[in-house]
Length: 463
Image 1 (spheres, rainbow, N blue to C red):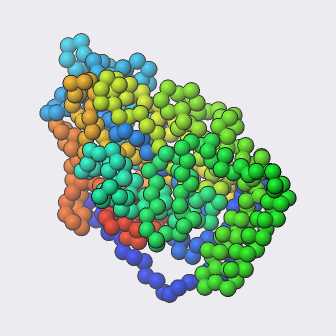
Image 2: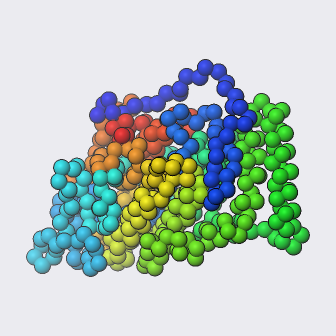
Image 3: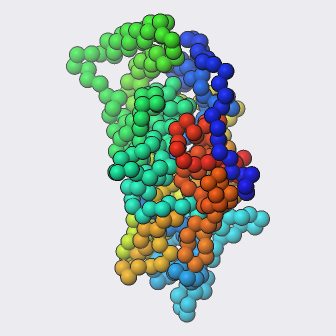
C-alpha cells in the first residue's frame, strides 16, 4: 500500500505556451455548433469530451445499510433489524437470525469480489462491477456544515468560512470554462474561493432545475429574436477584437464563443428541453413519483440532456432526507434505495445515449460520477429509535478512470471507526476527503497541489 499513495508534484513547465486564437473545439447544442477553445493547461490525457456529475447525499447516510454492512452485535454496533427498520419493499432484504424473533439481513457478498453490500444498495447492485467504494473515510467532525464542506473541498471550515473551492468548481476551472455552462449546481455545496480561478468557473447555482430554464428567459417587450442575435454578434466580435490584442487571447476567444452561442440557448426549442415536463417525457426511465427523491430524478434527467447537447461540463446536485435521528430512521434504507435507484437509472441511460462529439462512443464512456455525504450515522441506535452523527464516512465513484468492482478502506468491527488505509507522507492513517478529491483530480492529470493544501493521490484507487 505504501507505493499506492503518491503525493503529486507540479508538472514541469517549459515556458508560457500561448494558445492560437482560432483553435477550435466544436460544441454541439441540439444540432447547432459553436466554436470553443481548449485551454492550453488542460491535461493532455484528458480530452474535452469528459463530463462530470457530483451528488451530495445530504444529512449523513447509514453506511452499514449499503457500503460497509453490519449484521452482528459487536461492541457499539446494533445492526439494522426488523425492530428498528421498515424492511418491506427493500429489494435486497433477506432475513438472517439476530435475537429470538428479531431478524437482521444477509450481507450481499458477490463471489470473487472484495465488495460487501447491505440491503439498501437497491438497483445499483446490478452495476457492482462498475462501482468503486471507499470505506473508512476519516471525517473528524459531526457538524453538518463542516462535514459538507470537508467532503466537497477537502478542508474543514475555518471560523465559519469556506477555505477552498469545491471539487466541481475545480473540475470546471480546469476542463470546463469553454462550455456555455461550465458548472450547474442544484443544491450542491459548491464553493468558488480565491482569485486564482477563472471567473467563468463560478457555478450556476439554483434551487431546482426549473430555475435554469427561467434564467434563459428574456423580455420581448423591447427586443425581438433578431435584435438579440445582433447584440450577441456585437458582443462576440468585441471579445474577439480584445483577443487580437491580448497576451492571453484564449479567455476572450472563449467569451466570444459563449456570446455567439447565446441565440441558440434562447430559442424556445432549446429552453423548453430543460423544463421538468419535457425532461420527464424525454427520460421516462426515471421514477418521478418517488417518495423521497423525486427532485433527484429530474436533476439526473437534466444532466443527461445537458451533456447530450454538450452545453455543460459539470452537473452537481444535492438530495436530502437522510438526517434520521428519531423514528424516521425506520425509512432510512428506503431513502437510500431510492437514491441508488436514481444513480443506477442514470448510468443505464448514459449507456444508451450517444456521445455528442465521439460518434462511436456512449456518454457513459466519458461520464464520471462522485457521490458523497457529510458523515455517516452512529453504529448504535439512540433512545429515540434513530442514529446520530458519526465521524466516519464512505463514498462512491463510478468512472472509467477508477477501479470498478472494488472496495477500498475499512472500519473496525466494534466501533465503525476508520482504520488506516496505508502509508501516507504524514504517516500511516485512514483516508480523508482530501485524499479522495486529490485522487479524483489526479485521475484527469490535474495536479491537486495547484488548488488543495491537503490530500494525496491514492494510485491504488485508479484504473
